[in-house]
Length: 414
Image (cartoon, rainbow, N blue to C red; front, side, top):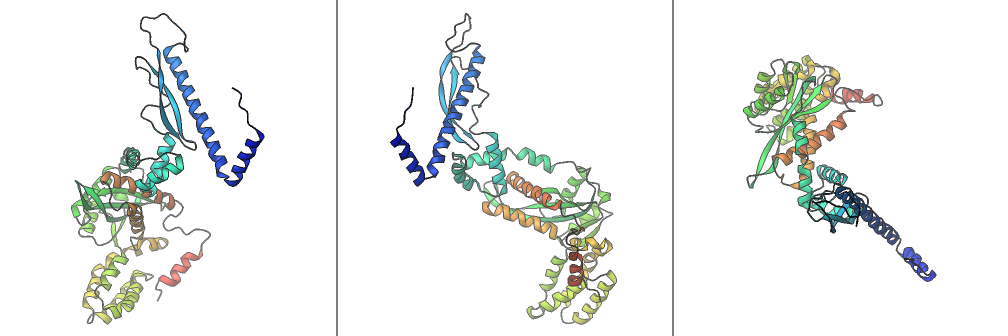
């Protein structure tokens, strides 16, 4: 059939495009969707021809003959094209199953991958559902987003249980954080234990994520045993950086007898200042900083003795708190000087915990332990990519002044 269009109609179309330029792209999109739908339908029709062994209307003599039985219409979503109408052929005996577009598939794999990435990056299921119609021309329900994300559970467990025997780990950062998680129909605060390792080359990697009570020595012991079961060489670990969680230091020393403990100076300083009157907080904080940032252990001990003599009568609780933790706060001085900044505190793992909270904040409540592991694994992998260019103790060549800046401003030399 020949299609004709008048000059007046052409001018009407041009005027419409001038007034609404977007309409041109809508027309193009509709034509592309129609053409792609026809192409896929034709491809499946050819597949049916191959399945039956004869073309349409071709007769053959067979006892067990099968015939075409029309088609049914359905929709399929393609990335960059949107939702297209297709006609899936049927046979009378119901034996034909197309491989071009399987019956259960509603969109192509790349869309599923994109949805998973957006969900892991922090877009909630409801927001994704609203965005999907604008992005791909079809609304993906919140349930579909959750279903797509569940397909990642296997990969997440494989990463959590990966072999560590090839990792040469010298330092461990240890901490835990709490999440609001749905458990057995109710919302509970569930702690997740986190361990970050530092290799001989200074690269950081998340070694373990495991649900457990961070206040329990038993929970940490199970965590350390699990790391060793996966291949972590306990004798290679020489330092553990942690805060003062009950029982953690003792369990760590038992599981890694060759390692020393570095107590987080930030946590200790907070504990000290909690025992100091408001008007003296700044003064005490400066003096504690002088002790922690001394250039050697000898000077740190000297500054502490001066601090003790000065404040023992007025602030005995604060002095006792510092004295009790002093040795473990100065352990970092036994290691290479270029690594001191990173070994003084648990900032490395606190940053990861902060990213965990940022990712789970839009959700308010995590659906369960598996969902929590999936989200945290994505955050960990993203952080590891960031860490690759920033090994511990290595100052970028284009920023040589950083080391001097730290020494001039944060290290007590006299």
